[in-house]
Length: 154
Image 1 (spheres, rainbow, N blue to C red):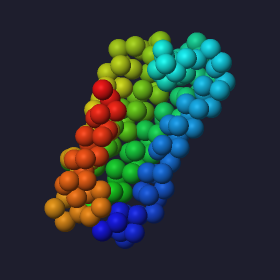
Image 2 (tube, rainbow, N blue to C red):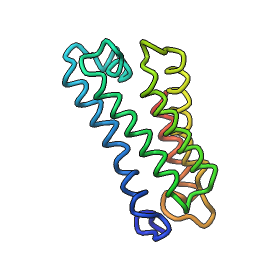
Image 3 (cartoon, rainbow, N blue to C red):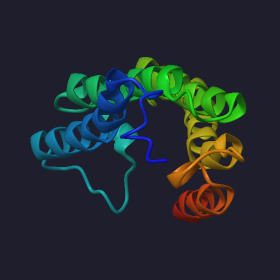
Image 4 (cartoon, helix red, strand yellow):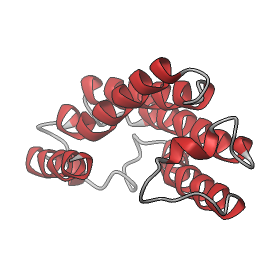
């Protein structure tokens, strides 16, 4: 069962799933291009949303859009188990908090929210697998996706 072709997954949920990486990657790419001093090797993308950044609103909007898109996707991903959908939604909410709490103004809140987002967004596939699921919702694929995402964190 392909999630994109699955009638139980509404088109708006598929659209929001596509929009999430567009918001994140588009936000950081545009924000970095507006901040010539940004060093992606030494700095995190959070620096692009700091109040001292050239255009903090760009990265802030990218983070907020990404968080909202994850929450919308979680609401519509009906074939996935509730635990996985909840983790995806929590990851989206935490990403939105990252947007609302710039690292220079709210370092502790920003750090905690980023950690919650990283953990939730990297492990949600393992919590979402379904014995009746197809495609990415099969147990083997869900665990493989989680291992890959967790690997990106280390």
